[in-house]
Image (cartoon, rainbow, N blue to C red; front, side):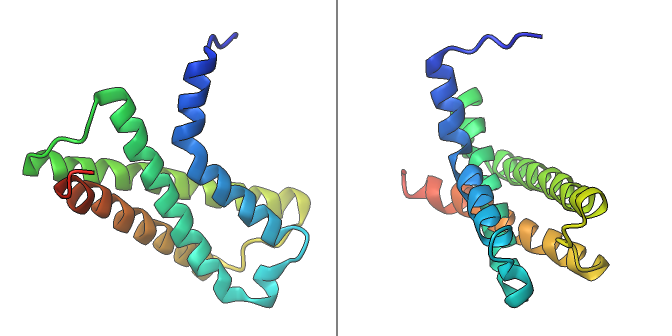
Length: 144
């Protein structure tokens, strides 16, 4: 299957995904060569919070690209926030499967048990919820 994408569409897609790309790259630079998560286990918390926030920002940017803008009616704000949290939730689940598969097939030891997985998902959702709330409620009210 061939994907037809113009250069301008590719630039828009990269613009939308730039925050998760930076967070993913930073995560790999921290985790793979230096193994900092084993030395500083609490570093995992802000990384998942920032990762969730980056996915939420990308979800808002994608929504704005496809639909024009986030609506200002209360029901639409609530729906928008739930949609963003749904995107962040899906991404968090896929991310944890990725970490599990890496541990299983490559023995990377990225997951430290079920409490770690639940904590990772919680902080990813917290970051996504906070960024989504800010982008919808606070950011739109200031006219930015």
